[in-house]
Amino acid sequence: MTDPAADQLQLAASLGRLGTESAFEVLARANALSQQGVDVINLGIGQPDFRTPEHIVQAGKDALDAGAHGYTPAAGLPELRESVARQWSARLENPVSADEVLIVAGGKVTMFFAILMFGEPGAEILYPNPGFPIYESVIAYSGATPVPIALQEESGFAFDPDQVLAQITPQTRLIILNSPGNPTGGVVGRDVIDSLVAGLEQHPHVAILSDEIYDQILYDGREHVSLLDYPQIRDRLIVLNGWSKTYAMTGWRLGYSFWPRTLLPHAERLAINSYSCPNAATQHAGLAALEGPQDAVQAMVSEFDSRRSVVVEELNAVPGFRCVQPAGAFYAFPNIDETGFSAQALQDKLLEEVGVATVAGTSFGSYGQGYLRISYANSTENIRRAIARIRSLLS
Ligand code: PLP
Image (cartoon, rainbow, N blue to C red; front, top):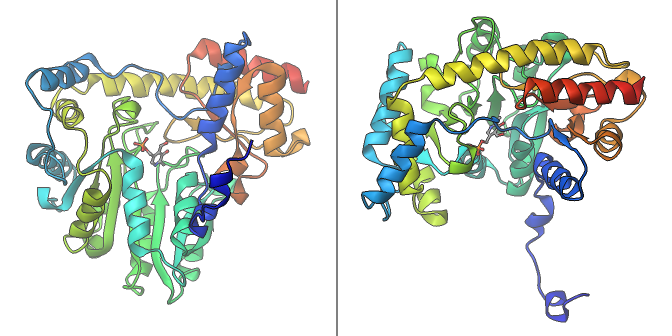
């Protein structure tokens, strides 16, 4: 029934440009099917299937018991900003300091703030496609033009630096990069980043947002290459990171970012205008995560690594599938062209007919047509069962 009062409301046109993250819709449909008694195996959602390590949970509880119930500074607890800066300074040739760090309420906040800071009608923002869907959504919401950086399977889903540089115009305000990447698991090598950064020196009007939220989830001995390693672009570099993936803390809603000192006050004001400050107890848990033992992170990554081999091998045995080895994160991105189904049709068919939740490549942008995202944040046993179901459906 339509509410007559609602007919009179005049919503902002910008709302019509806001997209969504389909993984959440898939999760809702999968849960609804489970409640009807269907045995659904979820390879759709992008969150570690591990509990947050116990010492981190305990630090959150202790903070609540000790009375951490009030606002914190909008930019986050000083000791947490210091801890982030210290950790990264140990990894970098050029240290970072706490006044460049903003603690935020989850990884997404940084991309929202960065895009709103540069996006408006007439502006162009480059973003990876296929890529995390919120980039394109918020760019369009801001009124700016989303300009896709096409990621190709042939190059392990890394961008081509010459192509990115050729897409820059006087209207380009921001370039978004993401390595290790969602949804592809692709990792960009140092040589590629070297070339891009060298080229960017000719384009001083362009800011860079580097989404490094999967920086700890890398395989085969790869080392993370951070854009923070390039002092020549520090004055226009924003780096997104957080606790969600590394410490299995997606529900705690805690992230951090590095900002040039000229931009950080704008980001801080956006925080004050929206959520005031990140959750106080969560920040204490985040501090325990950074300062405490890291063995749980290593154990999680090595478990993901062994599942990665299973996933790739099993997917390559599905008729019509072809899957390259992901180098990071916890996603495989098989090419499904030869099944004859579109990505969306196959996603729906797998969920409805064999109870396997996946996400269509097109949920990550138009260049995701012909691909499915398979999250291996599920047990090896479930991964094997799910892919067996896919194989029998397509055989
Ligand atoms: N960036 C990428 C590439 C992601 O895949 C995600 C989450 O899936 C985020 C950012 C957002 O992280 P958070 O859940 O902390 O907001």
